[in-house]
Length: 208
View 1 (cartoon, rainbow, N blue to C red):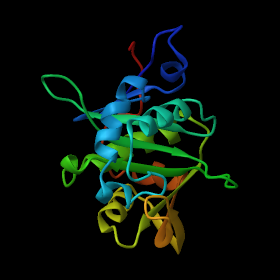
View 2: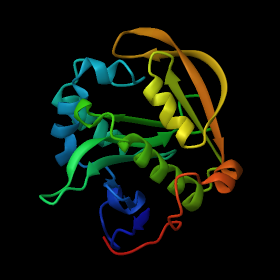
View 3: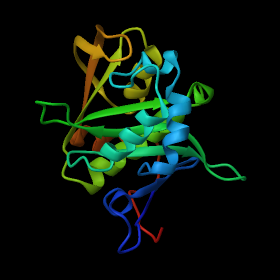
């Protein structure tokens, strides 16, 4: 993973959240011009029902509202994830972390458009965000949760080194009900000793 340092004087969305690059992906702060692509991929019941916070149906206005609030949260970082292609980056999904109301430990979250499932992109993006959180911020623990009905999400957390720490219920906005989830956590010390996702150097910085 490479961290790309935005230039001095850049807008808040770029100055507070770095740009991350992996082998296949580019991750950066969501921008208002991304709202249409976010809405296009989030407006899918199969996507929304596996997340806690996505509404369904998901309208373009929801995308704009998300971008507005995602870039002003003081307790986390949200990244729009793009697949790097020769013709240019293609929006694929979202990955980031933040604290839920009443909680002090941030939780990792991610979702990808259905067209990008089954390719390991969620794991690649999550590892980049985790590396950033533990190497470039004061965070020393991350939480995670996966619906019992979503084994693919559970595998992402496990491949990133998260350890199961219990079960519970989470409210899913898209269906207006609470569903059973498995809860996971990753300590910074565990991350430092494992770093199971390869031998890439810890973050470097360069101009945007």
